[in-house]
Length: 394
Ligand SMILES: *Cc1c(COP(=O)(O)O)cnc(C)c1O
Image (cartoon, rainbow, N blue to C red; front, side):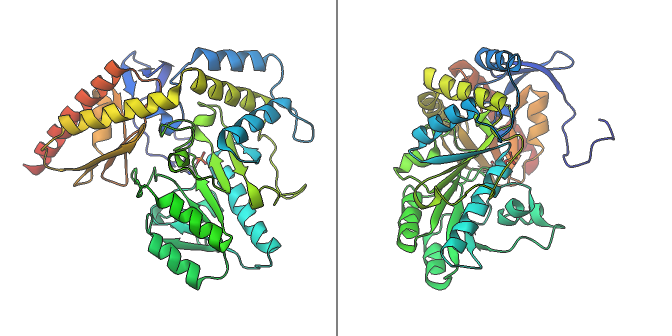
């Protein structure tokens, strides 16, 4: 690999030349089954014809004007997303971290508008919200923060999934203005809270007049089996952030607001040069259309259930497999020991997976994966896990 690149990633020694659906081919012509989708980005798979057409067509018309002007494609995508979410307003960014930056700024400004001059946001242990200074400060992972102190102030951290801790904060921290939480923690290890967790948070936020802010950057756009993961719990957040799958590979993020969060920002409070440009929004619209046309929310739900059941079968009674969990196509297989080397072993077998939180195999396959491809995923990965666990204990 070129030494010109900063060493921010420990990269696997493979590079891909082209893709089609769930498949990728490397520069040697070897084929891989992609069960990661570029970390929940390529929900429609690779080289989807509708995306290709949207990009080519739009590139021949207009890539960028400026947010100094009206952008009809941005308005159209914005209207579509707020309608899907049952929310009111939207700001487009270029990434997840930037979407969360907007959310954090909205929470703070909302606090100041209420006369709270040192507003704080409740965040969770094991959370991940991005790599900018504010979002790494919100992130619940010391590895992400170390070396970048002083961190941004104004975050109160509690354990994920723990409503009593949140109630305790409500009793004791009068300067709290918002809660920022992932419906399912992705980087943190596919951590799935109790069924009524978001409802409970909603209730406390309503009582305290806090903003409920959901980071759906990894869980959104159909992956969980609903368009947005919180829709499993019949609540509407005040703020929701999106990115990853919204562009299927075209960089785009969004921060949606509702109710008291909707009119916090006025002219001059926030901005971006690239955010919401015609090309990104054209692709975003095509992604949403395709998810709807192909009924990919239902597909994610069905395929996710099948994968969970099949892995449970294939790995039944395998000592060292602690838990197999998931919602839709966010799937975690937790082992009783660190298992990062499984990524390389899988790569050799032509399978792309991820390991996060040291010992959780994370699967985020494209929503368009077919049953026989899912069968291949289960067969290949289960064999690898069994071999890994038996070798390791010898
Ligand atoms: C990926 C991710 C982010 C950061 O998004 P970037 O586009 O990398 O800035 C934030 N929150 C969650 C939950 C994510 O999965």
